[in-house]
Length: 94
Image (tube, rainbow, N blue to C red; front, side):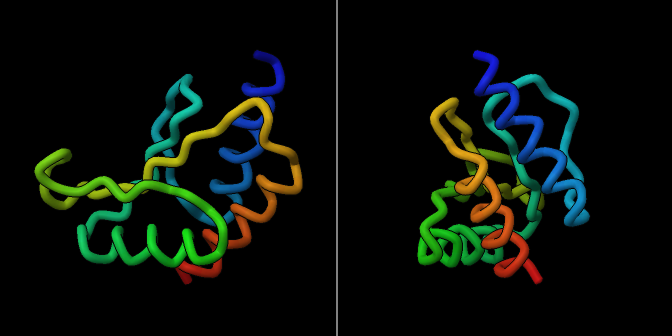
């Protein structure tokens, strides 16, 4: 459990340092709000091409205008993998 929460903290800090706003939550599943459904799904596909699986969630699963990437962490993710995911997120969203 300690490794999982360390990974969650590392990813959240990295995302916030990139300018992403995250809701306060205590969960290994991080919702990264994108807003537009089409843009969200494009981000999800581009991340997958870079080796990062972040499921795009869009209406009707979530309300219109709140499409998001669902990022799920595991205790077995390494710091290097978290850094790679952050780099990929920065690249596809800029």
